[in-house]
Image 1 (tube, helix red, strand yellow):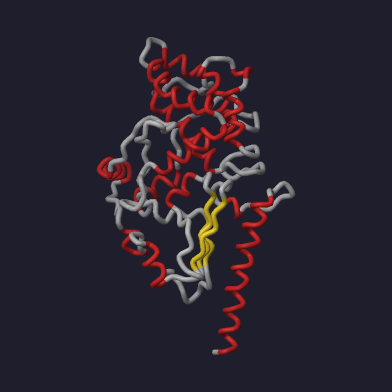
Image 2 (image 1 turned 45 degrees about the vertical axis):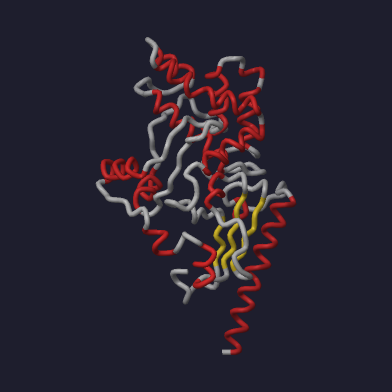
Length: 302
């Protein structure tokens, strides 16, 4: 849309263009993560949901931090309950995002269907009855699937994304739902503004993207000045809650895959790819081919 003189079209794979202020609920992301784990195992969901209070309770007892450090094989005990919970929540969120039907190495080495594998680790008899043992086994799927990590360094290193989420991508995310797998957390804009100011000495522009590209009544907006865009979304991807899930026009097309995860359509093809994924890619190639054909037809006629 920004460079129409050099772009014929776009494949917006898992693009949460509606995950901005006052467009969708700030709890869509965590609600989808919750459903991903709950759909695999009710017990898995309950163990994870109940673990946050247990971590807090343990941290508040004498020697509790040392116990947590030992239970999760952390490299040092200079941590807080919040640090540990953030570390575990990151694993749960990214595993839901990358719940691919084949092994991957996008964020970190993971097996096929990693959400299922995490829940299997939690539900396994070999994990015993201790919540922390179960959680450690699940965390190992995300942080140590290669088996090479001796201890975990849980220091926060979100890299460029944290900066971007304070400048261009002010995306409301919270967990204020009784059914949420995560601790209750009401998203507040002021809290984000304060964090960004303190951390990066910048003032975020929460309305910039929706002002620049549209967001409210996205169908009407895109019909006026957009064309040749494919919006792909996999419904197991937490970001799909902010995606375009319905066709807007003949050239603004939504492709939705019930079992899909974050931009799974753009991953390298493998022999193990399920038929639904092959079909998605065929649809995309067919549409893009038509764009290119139309471009050359227009050139000849021009």
